[in-house]
Length: 398
Image (cartoon, rainbow, N blue to C red; front, side, top):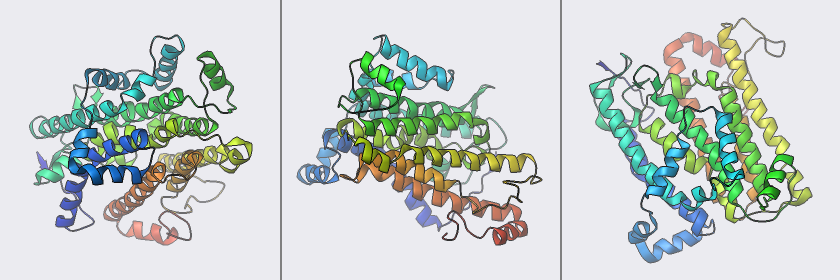
């Protein structure tokens, strides 16, 4: 087994401290996020008062135990053998014909997250052991540090057998599928009255005697379009940092199995109990077309990068030499899209915007890591490129 060299931006002490913090703080944060959204009116202040009164015992009290129902519902979302469209159609059909009520998923959400936290930790431990004992390929190895190996992973492409790709399952099948399924679940669960404009959802709402607020509708549509864009572009995803460079460890696998279903869907989770009837004038101010435009621009930027790689740079974009506005400009419309599908919640509470803030930090860090990797790999050619495209993410700013 080879040695995995993992360069770090900060010193080893800071790096290890950051990793240990994430390993220990992310699981309870997921439960706290759920509790605040569902049981504390979305208010950080109310949650804070609760823990001031009850201390650490309060966390133990609110932390739901994984139930058998939660395990069954969690496995329902892990449908990697089914296509994206078939999954959503099947999920909606089961609800339409009264076979399965998706509201059950929301009612057991805390238990589901608790089950995912425990199950995913076990999954990552087994994945770590597999990397040591039976790696799937020669592209694996240890950094010599147990915490780093567990956090970043031992293998780049771990597999079970010849065809089951573990990273594809965690990232694409479970993580992204659960994002779409939970978005629909929140929309179905909501019982507030409101106006909406999408004919298909109007028929569904009338058929099941339910009403969806226009704020929830905007959130659900934009999230589903974004996830649909991901699966439409899935082949291009294999060239991204997540698949091509980041190993399968806690950072990627636990993140996709737990963090994506809980944090990425949190604006919709908030709207279930906080329906906002925007009305025509306010809806226009959070115009969903802006979110759709951002998603399209994000897709087009990714397509341009794919096209550039496929032609080895011998192409033109918009009739010009493909140098670009910024080295990672595609992160800008992605962050803006997350804001536009959160904005229908308005600004009574700041917690729904946690994902927007988190995504901004994540992508800024990813841009830095990607630049460091490219600088090491391409040397002087990367410096030449940076001179032609001086801005990292936002043209004229950063």
